[in-house]
Image (tube, rainbow, N blue to C red):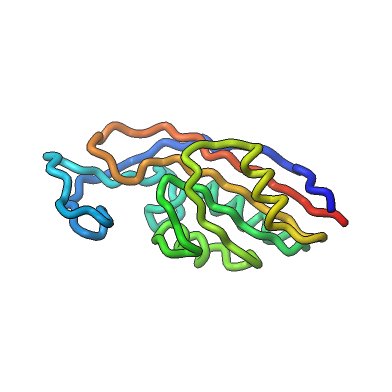
Length: 159
């Protein structure tokens, strides 16, 4: 089987935020809440309507799944996900329900070789894979808008 990269692109976004009072929903597996004076929840300025994803990222996912190929999604974010166990990945699943498999990973940085390795492991002949890397830091002690580049790759598998 041959894995071929079809498309590589990026989406540039700017975040907006609001001050929050952190609780156990924001900090998992810590004994104490961090004692920072202010915390801010960030989301893309032009968002999907749920303050979670960039509208352009959701539009990209919808465009990819509208193609006549069975397609998998690998969503790589700063927040580890176990097959849909985070609000970020759950939101993407609900807004773009046409993927045949969805994987949440947390690699720490955009790496096309890593994405290609995942595609080689996951794809079956005739399938496609959308790898979407989302580096936006959703929870921060800084209220300044974040500039983030979401990278994406689309792979195809042929027998």
